[in-house]
Image (cartoon, rainbow, N blue to C red; front, side, top):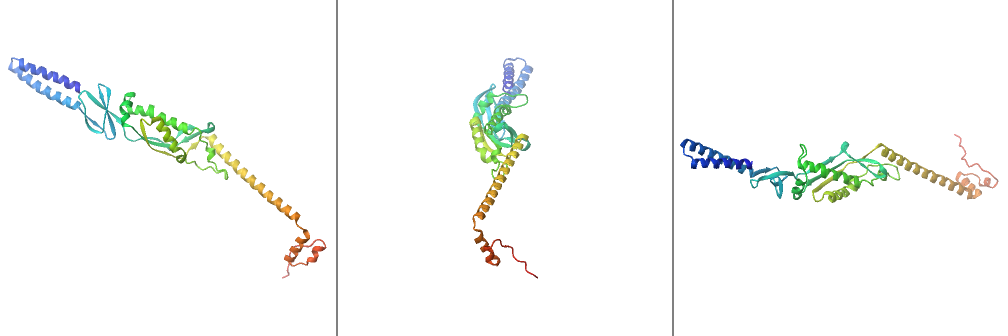
Length: 293
């Protein structure tokens, strides 16, 4: 736009020269009209080239002949020099949304596979906008910011997820007393590590606003391994119970064997109302007599 303004200004100056040096009145009147129109359009193009509108929540990148000047602007109506332009850099909130069936598959402990549902809210730092704008170029119909997200932000998020879940073992969530396998609370265990990993990888370029996990899913071999581990715990618990019961029965048997049989018979005879002398002569029936109707 600025270049058109300069060209129109040149036309206006040429028309003015014609007015000054022209001799024919008809030519001079036409030159005056050309000068007026050219001057007006020239001013309009120059002023228009100085005005830009930056959308809300975006950062304006001021460029001069296609190169960033290092200056940034906020949103709204902005003024620049005629030879400068303003390109946009999105500083609004962004969402890395991979919940439900769109979860992220990662390799966990023992080379097992888990699908982690996660949502990360983040925004680009405005002070790094000129540098990041200059580092990336438009690709097809994608803006510089979209290329930045695709090539810089998303790979670092994926890498951070892979890193912090490398030692995740779902067998650790199995209850060692019951064999049950409740869904692990990833927010409690992995939220802060993920935020720390992202700040290490992208902390000078983005701000992480929130991280939220849902319950993970596993591939079939991992699901079978969890079920088998729970079954082993249940079998081991039942075995311990059987051992404890057998030990109790053996203890009762040993106790009965160590009790004086005559004394025991006298106690039972007294309780049942039988003659105690029967205990002295041998066996005694310890059953209650059946009363006649």
